[in-house]
Length: 68
Image 1 (cartoon, rainbow, N blue to C red):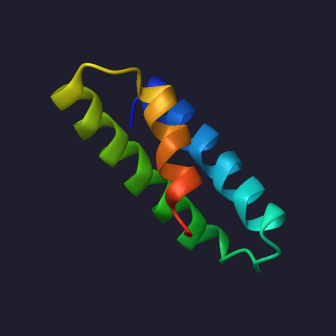
Image 2: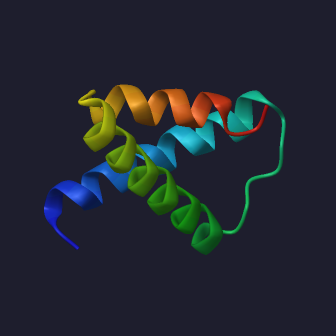
């Protein structure tokens, strides 16, 4: 993985952890959280390519809507 992708995954992981904490849900195992973060980054990249939007904004939107 590249440096920027690693940084995006770390950001997504932190945002996911925050969402789990705010909702009072138990955090998944670290490996599962890392997998979820990578999936969110991949989806955000796909959406950004389709819509020409900022990946950070898309990451935040995806994570906000993740557990609704």
